[in-house]
Image 1 (cartoon, helix red, strand yellow):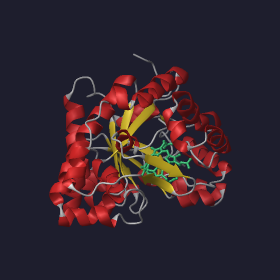
Image 2 (spheres, rainbow, N blue to C red):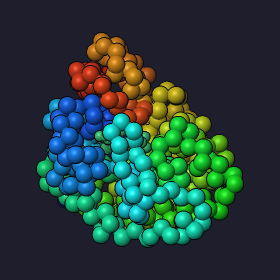
Image 3 (cartoon, rainbow, N blue to C red):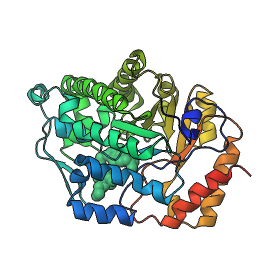
Length: 350
Ligand code: CP3
């Protein structure tokens, strides 16, 4: 068993007292870092970075060399699963993900292969081993997957879309097709997260970025139930039961109580709700992670410090807080502002 030098994240996830709250940032390895841009140019493209364990390891570590972060997050993407299922993923510079084939009919869903994680996604598992070797217990490593609904949105649309209308239409026009797809993705996601945990990640996070596009009723039946199945399976399996799970449904604060009942250890929250109101609604049942506006990082170090202090003071002395942004850090974010945010969290309340 590895002894961790920095246990803030793991303690916060158990809702134990910490000296100061842990802080990490969604998309902390990415385009706002000049060293990331330069490595991506050398590699040729984003997928090569993900699929080459040495490069994925290097990119994972880049933000930790610059900033006093309390966690590392595996460098990969939620779309590795549909890519491994053969949909033909590519990322055009500045355009986001694009699939050669998309999902429209039951036949398309039935044609999707069952994933063999150790073979089809071995590059992710190799990256986990390599990253853990480099981290040497300095900070915990977070693994992740997309929620079945969020991954399905991209598979149905064939790429990014501003409101994923085709996926949402399918929920009304062909719910049996959507359900079959979500069930297949649920099985793949359980195997994928179990693979990451056995390879050595210390925490896993489910990114349900598009959960907030669904009505509360449809959120329950097309997103939450599948995440609940994933959580229940990981918690029922002795080899994965002790790994904390964070669930992040963006724009879905209306569903907080239901999310808190899903059996997860922590909920990610965006900036549409303040953390202390969120805590009042879910009680001490789960740890909360969030929820600064990524746009705040385009202000000044002084303003960032005020915003962080106000978040920490409003939260008070309760255990179970992880400071993060409410969504991924934006490209062009000034590095000194990231530094200011982390320093302000580590100064604590006051
Ligand atoms: O947080 C981290 O540092 C770990 C790495 C990580 C990436 N993607 C790297 C990435 C994580 C956790 C993700 C998750 C992810 N991927 C989500 C859920 C979280 C979220 O941000 O909502 C989603 C929806 C995706 C799908 C995806 N990947 C999109 C829509 C895009 C294009 C948009 C964009 O920002 O370019 C990506 C590409 C991507 N994934 C990049 C990175 C660093 C940028 C690629 C590049 O241009 O170099």
